[in-house]
Image (cartoon, rainbow, N blue to C red; front, side, top):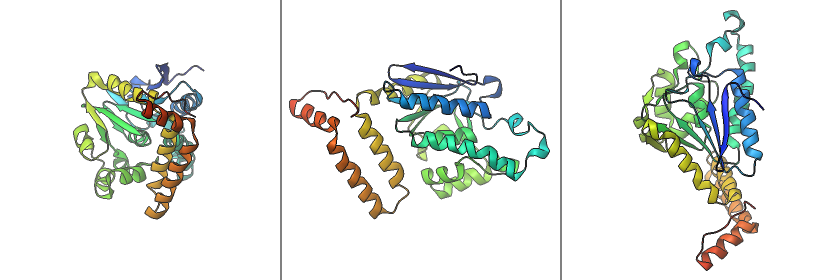
Length: 264
């Protein structure tokens, strides 16, 4: 498939999705959201891909939603019904990103505003360049984040700081976002992609099925009561004893050699 708003590459077991609307600071429109979803589906079913990186340019990860897209039919088209219809497929794509079984890494630089931050929140890991600015400016347009920003942000950094970001619309810099636990790494701009690639490479030698189960247990359990979440963990833990990778991992440990996992 040919892409017009993203670049899609595969390299050494990693899928690299690069947002490619520099003239719009990588602002999201319908085509871009659909192309991201198509690339995610391709990476998900490719057995050679161990991890997925999503990135933009050095000056902008995603600057938000393209206002030309929203105003395509004129300001009078900005009705509650139309906004609900527009955001339903966007939320579906973001949910797909959040539950995809392979590890996902947002490699962020420059602007990560609105829908860009919301997309990054759906990833498992976030690595940011030092020049990254993160924010939810929607309140300054008289609206709120509409693709998970209010809910995922609060679950990730706590309700107090989430309220400050959402209700004031003021951005924060990468160092503060790191201190809040929003980011895994902060690196110089020139090292961003290399750091993300190195992080993605870790998953090439790990048991893919166990990683997928671990993701599901963590993401599901965090929204459950502790008793039910512990039971979910016990089920995931026990189930993995039926896999070839568990047997290989134990055998390799006893033989004092690196394991050769197959994702089975």
